[in-house]
Image (cartoon, rainbow, N blue to C red):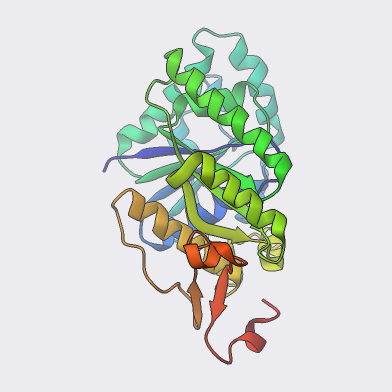
Length: 301
């Protein structure tokens, strides 16, 4: 099978990057896509978010310095069709080691070449640290495409411009001439506030259809799920966060012509509305509408 490498990247922290990496990977796996999630953040939040321990020697550190093979580091998770290469704090030392070698920007690309050649995975999703260090640059040099999670607040817009310029520079400097922006995911969206609506509209005005129509809402269950070591679709499959990430996975596949966007979301009584529909945009964009009688039952989700 043909493998696509997707980087989930934003140099700004706290924008829902790891949450998006873990839950998009899990939702793609739910659709029977073979997915490998590679945790390249030394904080190892994606690792713990899937219920795996942070063990010395389990990360890509050994492969990056030439003492291990990436294929040998792949571990199963509690989600069918989803595998992971975990992270741990020693991965922070890889930046120093990589910088000493030749072709240091392509070290990760070379390490992942064997995994891609194995044909085991439809998608390899790379979770980056919130920085523009050597590890993140290696991720961007190895990826085919980038998804940028963007918090629906104005400070996040500054980070977006940095990322888009960086992608352009990597193209122009031939570090990764094929790299492109897959899409922008608006996260932590609160439809009750004018600010969230204005930020979404501003991003759409500049980037058009590169912005996913699916909005990821602020949701308590999304915040809780990592502490239980589970993706949202296994922790609370009917909450608004789970509905949103399933919808994002459908939209992601539909854009790649690998699936169709359903009119109705997974979960009883939920229907997603596009905030970019003209009649909605003129008013307050509604993220989710529920079938009659469902409001009370889902109020606590």
